[in-house]
Length: 126
Length: 126
Length: 126
Length: 126
Image 1 (cartoon, each protein chain N blue to C red):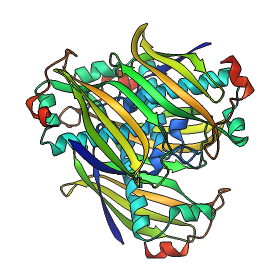
Image 2: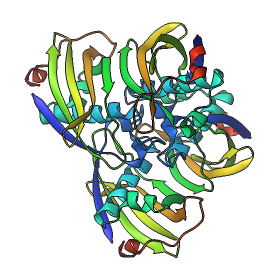
Image 3: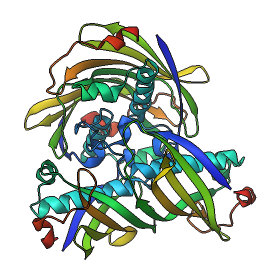
């Protein structure tokens, strides 16, 4: 499944070079993951109430070109890999089709004590 | 009681004009409040475990001069006012003695349902 | 003029109580101001290139009820007051019509040396 | 060269699970890099005035255990690799000696048009 989500760059996002601060791409791609999960009909609050938590376990990111103040960006999120208790997503940030940032994000499903748990049913369709 | 706390300005804090983004002064002064409470021997985690929460109810802030990348700042926090369930602090951000920002922050003590609660004993000395 | 702008609450926005961290309302209302200025046809980058900068000079904010993770919020921005070199905006954050946060934000127009400058023409319609 | 830097976890840093939001480790390790560069006697503002900029080109990060509200953390930064225009650092975040997060960060030296530039002299000692 491929999911697209728009993000605007605001003052809060850029550093003194007028480009997006490197940690803020992680905020952008997390918004896109939340929206992909919402679009799949999965209720994160309900999962949490049921004692299931998703946590980022690993991140590999390439910063290719800078995003700038006021840019309109598009985040693409795609399923990359999946096992019993973890899955990986490939996420790209683009401006008018040009890739600025890409990351592979590995996410684990845990209970609230941090033990790995089987991915919930609804995740199969992602 | 007057409490002083140093803060360094990093990349994460400034905007494209090279000055501290206006919301980030609120992060700085919250760090100073946490440290003042720690210095007074109050354990916020224990209060929270006991069902007591502090929340900002009102903020009045004046932005006087910009703080810049790499500046070393000092936050001064002083008790300003107090009633049964709320207290006010005056906080100032200075660089080499020059005031850059000042705020009056009114904080309420609540239970976890949001009902006002009497301030805990240890707060009397603040 | 009244301007409305939607904001979704993400993980990046909330604190350990599951409510929006107090400084983050300032990020939300700044996004709304940027969008209001864009909607009025004013190009902030062009103003900056021409040596004009807007800076927040004063902020009065009331935190009425907490916004929570995953909430869909609406920011209302209204002109409140205006003089030669400064203007004030009233901004409210609502969830399903209920006011959670409101602020009066006073903004000054300056040159890059920080001297007050007359508001640009296009601001008259705000 | 190995550099150590302490970081306290504040309210601004944690999410609704009470653990540090994943993007915020990048803020922590950037503070440590800035302090390592300062400790080496390199003036980032002077480099920028001379048209030299450092930018993160690649990041590989492992999230091993969560850092929590109020934790006192230590960031270790070590040189890992170096070529003409780029260098890599290994950074670890620990709490009482236990590793919570580690990252390899690859940084390029560029001019203000984004062209690779030779690392400045002072960097040799890092």
